[in-house]
Image 1: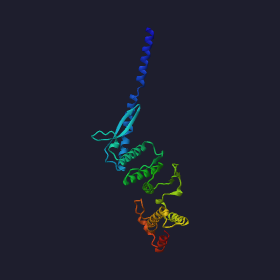
Image 2: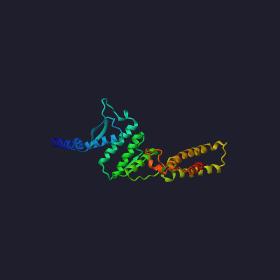
Image 3: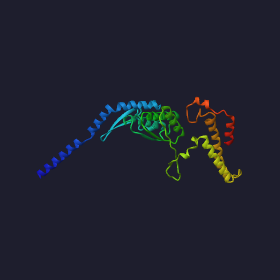
Image 4: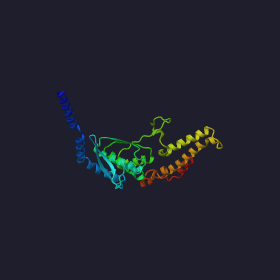
Length: 283
């Protein structure tokens, strides 16, 4: 009995020693200490730059440190006098999205330029100025050697990205996706671009096709079943006329969704009244 009791106590002592040696508190503390020395200063500086670029310097922020089970974590917290459980309790949806983008862009400095990034609708809930800032930052990342793929539902942001890429002198390739309906996946189909981005020639072709389809269907102005098709056709004709003024008359000097005014394009603007009248009658 005495020997058995001794063996049990010895085993318990060895287990306790193993537990002490395997505790990760010291590991967590060491990781946190090294991160504060090596990573935190550069991350803080990068975050400050990104907040300035996205017009978010009015938000009082601080980097909070937290260790958990061998992991050292950094949290973005509001530096306010009153304790706040969640940033979402104070920040608007747009500010939260902008802050998340700023943190993401700040961390990119640590992963190297040889890794690309994919962003899904990054400007949701952002206002015009911040959308433009995000487009500019993504163009800068491309100019520095990083490949950027961005998905967006916003025609405005699409044009902002195109303009930012053009100003930065980097390549910009676009693909258009369309829904197949019935909860099926969308497909890449450049033949079905949104109406807003189609040039005048494509619009006029579609208008002609729609007008012929109405005629072939036995269009009768007194028949209510044609109201929807006629309304759509009239709307397309009106927006196409506006696009003619923008694209042909003023030679894209001023374009919708684009902030630039390219005054040099006025030299090739259309002043041929016969051509204008012809296009008008066709539309």
